[in-house]
Image (cartoon, rainbow, N blue to C red; front, side):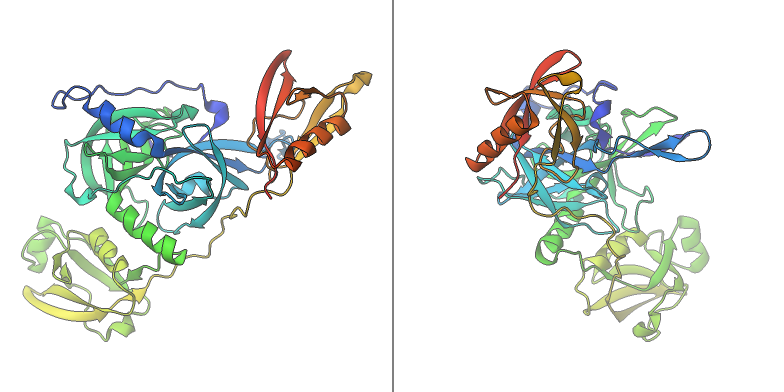
Length: 448
């Protein structure tokens, strides 16, 4: 049995499994893939999301037990810059139901992100960060030109390993994996794993032709099995242009229920051949179409373009201006005809995702004196909404220094951090003792 698996992963699984890749293909000049990667890798981002503390399973009596309330859950995905002003693309499933989202740049930068928009019928999200400089952005290619066998390159953060590069080929196009009515996935054997979600898929021109989103794995296996799926760039471009302009997709639709026309079905209904969308039933609001079409009709074209299948029809309608008239080429009982129908608005579900706000105004770090009368400062809790939420600090850590200053009480540590904040610094370095080992950790200070 195969399992469909989304790719975001907890940082606690960072050492779970190795990333495997494929060699550059024999038909590529030596160094071709490396040259492309060198030109595009600075546009690929690490997406870090903070979730509320998770609840553990029942204690045997059927009662759920809360885990340590001070410990938020951090997970990692991937993304890429689509506009130098700070627009970052990723998957919806990477950032939904989160308390905070952070974008990490390849040079070690870190920015709080806000959600510009997320359609409810596509695994796509658009984020915005406010960087202190223009960011290198990708170029979009035409995914409709992809052919099985074309070489593609994936870059992302599988298992938390940033800027991991894998290469493979396009295994198939227009795959329906039953994620949405618009499925048009690119299948690839480029190795993608948990954490690759939202990362770009490049062609050999260095253009983004897809966004890695889903992998298939046999049985309980959760790593790459050479069957991964990416959302085509033409779908991405449409969604991102609408999200940037409106904050929502504002897609069009036809109130129809349709099915694929196979070769056998085409013979049965007198259609010219396979392809198109056979109308099963009229949906809600079909009366607005004035009975121009009816069950049994096969829609063969949309505004002069051939309709390949029901999903193709849904995509074409979605991209058409709401309220406009579309010309449908129909086959009815073996007779070809043309009718005009209005494009209706696609009704989106109410957004239930917690959308992060502006940079946090609080540090979110609770400190206490060490037990046993020691002159030490212990981290007693971490607020998921605070600026230190994704820093790596944990409850129970002992803070020995803030910058170079030794601290022996919570008041001293807080004063040192406030002084750093008052100096308009964005980060502070703290020396932490954990499991008898000392390590420096950079923590973000609250925004202005």
